[in-house]
Length: 575
Image (cartoon, rainbow, N blue to C red; front, side):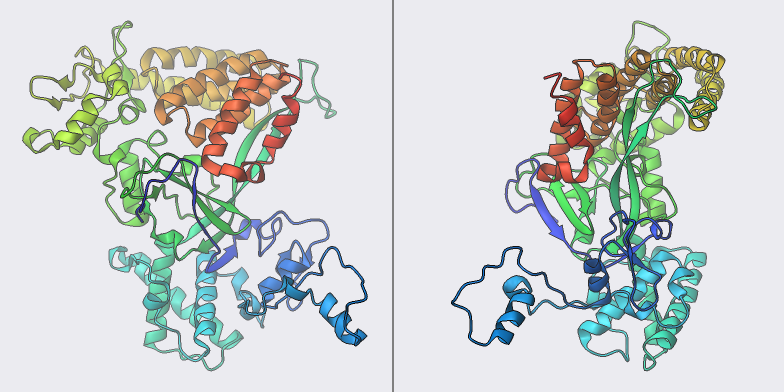
């Protein structure tokens, strides 16, 4: 997918309803099985099997494939209506023009509530494949033979690249699904080699093309409580953070055509089950439109750390993830050009405390050398050299390695890229591992909400050790700062929590950039702490996070993040 013309930042470039969608198993009891919103107390069950639950009769009817309409909110009685009162009443109560008579709903659940409840047993992606098969047959107008899946969806598939064990699994599931469809709904469905092969192809397409539908959830954190459930008197206050919850899995025929980049220029999000894609930066005509692919493991809790961004994972981990999950070798700008984030994300500091250079281990050195193929300097793209040499952030941590004489990048394991001093990484790694023991202990105590002063003291000393060992922009330092911020929040020491939260964000801004969506999520934490402190700096944090969310979500920011409305109200007094 490529832009045909210049596209401004924050432009909505695509919206799409799913070809087929299904709720994830862990959300079956809490979210609507059609629109994926949170279920109300008076949820509506399926009329046939009573297993799926819907937030309204509207969703129930759409899932069952029935057309529906709404009466106009304002109906005026006047003397111009037909003399036939019966026809007039039918015209009004049917909704008139509200319902598009050409609109056709194809039931996505009807075939699942006949006989044995097999959708509750089979994995979610297998049940999703069943919905795709049923819809494709309904569109063809017959239920005897499965249509050609490659022609129906037109999506790439990964069967030839899958390991033998995974192929065997697809074969078994395709046979099971075919017989489930035949004996529960389509008695005339042919169970031959062609039908089985089509489902196998479909499952391999779903493997690399399906999207996880994600909704946002605000998580509120109170201070520690005593044995009676009352807040302790150490300045207890409410702070908040944003959590992303996987609720569904879907196939979007056009959305699947966007390629991946570890430095994406578009962002995908969801309103109900609708996919929306928006530019996060200015995109010039002719440039590819790319977002970041996430993991396909349905059982994994979704968060931004799942996405292979530059700044989230180092190059080595991104390449491995994309090869294992999507079966391709990433060659995006983030994985083919030297960038400061990949240099420092797992880097060590120089032994000279006055030097800002970074020291890399052998794995990072290999990956960075592969980017530019430094064994063959003459093959480097001149445009790539210019872009790299003009990168201010790279210059700050690797000035000496920007070889002016040969005009190419030079990296050695264990040597500072700024001053060329040698660093004994073996002893530094051992020291960092010991420090992480206390940081993890603090994290576990935060989860269990059982924090004592000794744990905090050990974690603070370990943070100092990490800062003296790891590079100042190493992501591990940011995570340690964030863990301490959470702990101090629970203890009610919000001033300390604010300081550690700011320190964490300062590092993350170097890794991601100051306008990345990850920074917006961290600013939710910081602004809630500042508001609890009645700190006027909350206004600046709120303005910054609103700017970021507007960049990624445009006019939908308040709909995706209801917490923003709360921030607006709370910030009025500060303003």
